Image (cartoon, rainbow, N blue to C red):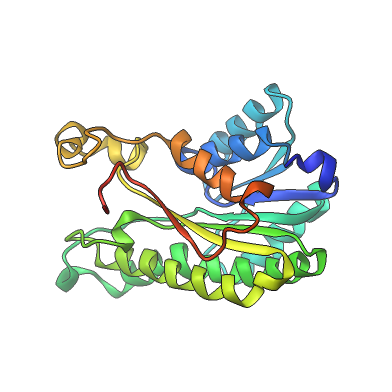
Length: 248
């Protein structure tokens, strides 16, 4: 579906989009015709690069600074996106953070920070966005979870709890709004070539993946793009794993 043809006043919002998976998703949606709000917390330079890349490819985008863990961020981020680009009809909750440690050593601060970023922020943004989508009788929400939400990974109890909670949240909201033309889905990436993975032994870890390689942000973005498309209008409450077979 082309946003410019069917929803001229609609836009997409992607959180945590200054780099990695978020940046790739922003570019993917812009390529499908959606004006895109590129959210960032601190990496303004990275967000501006994403915006410039979209503009160079003939798309339209703006960068919007907001810390999604701030309780007031949802209203401000979505409001600014609407003012700049039109009503928000696509929301990709991608922002996330890790604070790895064994469960008995995770501090309260690291527990709360990880859950606030990946789960609570997605709840607040979805709550804010869903009403206008229902009134428009069209909406696409995609939550970026993780294979860690599906299978154990020692040292990531906080991250796993947040990402598993995001999957349950996805299914529940999907059922609540299915009759109004709004779909709510999730993607669960495995080991993806991002800055978070750069510090790991990716080559060694790849041997544990059935596909024997690390995935790319663009491969995740392609799946998000499908879930945001008109072709996926009958897909809701689903989790699409993008993990090279890790969760099989």
